[in-house]
Amino acid sequence: MGGFHASVCSSSPNVHLVGVADSHEPNLQKIKAATVIKSTDYTSWIDMVDGVIIAVPTQFHYEIAKDCLARGKHILLEKPLTKEIYQAEDLIMLAQKAGVALHVGHVERFNGAVQELKKIIDEPYFIESHRMGPFSPRVQKDSVVLDLMIHDLDIILNLVNAPVKTVNVEGKKVHTDSCDIAVVQLGFENGVIANIVSSRASQIKKRTMAIHQKNTFIQLDFTTQDISIHRHGSSSVQVGSDQLKYKQEATIEHLFVYKDNPLKLEVEHFAAAIKAGNNLVNPEQDLTALALTFEIERKLGLR
Figure (cartoon, rainbow, N blue to C red):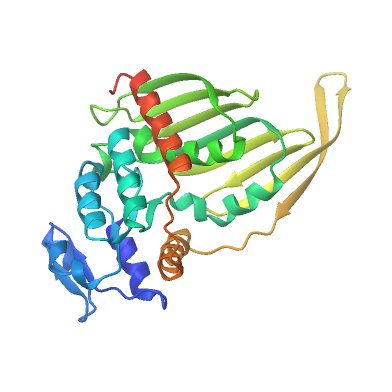
């Protein structure tokens, strides 16, 4: 993720990339701009910048973010926020006290399809999401819940806007000692049900969500940023001499979505907030999603 962030920053007219730090020196050689300071220690350039993007393994989030906040720096911190809820609460408190931005890198919030989805949701009663793909060794220290499912938890919590009432989980280890496949069913106090499937042990990459609500069925593809709205017309059963045929008629509307690189939009949103003096601290949304993630991990026996 650090490499993707550096690429976006280098190409954005609203961002000036001052320095890059990586403990793995070969990664630094991928940065070709001569004006960028390349170091294994971010403290060599930290005093020269307004904001910092932290894209390191989750176990290092707290200590690095805390140090940067103590220096009065605005932060874009890749998801998940921290490994423990008390650490997240501490960082939020420090950011509020310092009056600086603490933005959590939930990049799917900037997906064009997700932005449009918020405009057409009207009292959903059932939500399904699938987020799966092949295993990547870089994330083996985080469970699939903390690595992948947290994206969908964040989106669903924002769409439903009601407290979670029940949590049922199943998980399986495939590649790691953590959990690589997780199936979660959430029941909300307003009656909405959500089924969430996340896997990093699949041969295909799939990122989809489906929303069932009165008179409409909505399908969203995170990868292509496409949304289709299905409305039932009529159905009938035709009985022939040797077979039974089912006929269904429906209208399908393909919603126009302005498509752009979500990561670019996120970084530019972060930069614009710094210039505008917006501290971008959203404790309710960030802590709620993180706390639910940890509850699911506990039910899976990972905590």
